[in-house]
Image 1 (tube, rainbow, N blue to C red):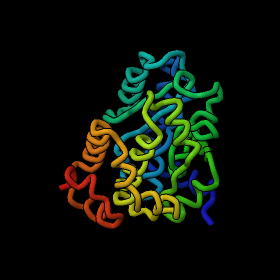
Image 2 (image 1 turned 60 degrees about the vertical axis):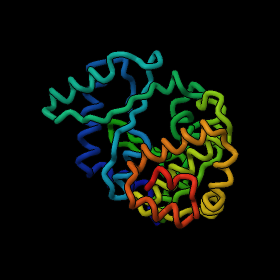
Image 3 (image 1 turned 180 degrees about the vertical axis):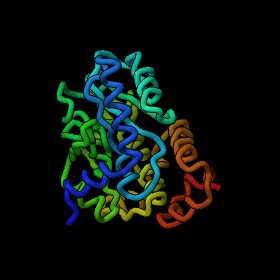
Image 4 (image 1 turned 90 degrees about the horizontal axis):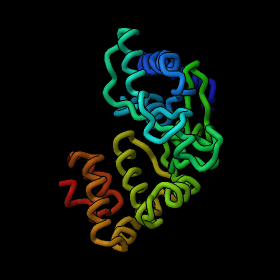
Length: 244
């Protein structure tokens, strides 16, 4: 059975992770207000599943939303370390955006807005790995996408700016379709069930929201024909216009 220690060891041997962690550790020293940076979520998931990440999400403890000086500190750290500038950093001060004042509860715990278990991963600049749920281990071992409903609820109620539960759920299912094809994932029974009713949920959205969700699919897939297979598998027709 896959263990947390094995995951931590694998990540700490990976050169892409090591470069990012070295950069963040130095950047924290350059800008003391960039406190306790951790890499979170999809960057770690993709590496553990053998796929190159598209971006690197970093959570930290700061003092305001859209805090200034963070990227500048990271760029200076890369310069000092003679590391090529990584183009796709994304930073979030979880003390400004989270539900509670608890860093770990907000990022990978009960109040995390992560809507699947494969992204409940967090690593600090010393290389220590944190997991939000045991389902993360089983999901990574079995390459299984499973919706995390507490995360969906947090997203709807705290981050969705008035959007409906169905609108948010459709977004999570689109993400599941995209990731399933990209990372060769299996689906949990509940995810399979919901995906089989994708078009039913989609039709309940307003025309404007339907267009927004179609644009989200287009952004994720770039209209690559290889994603047509996953739509056909679940009988999804409402996204085909943007996938062809």
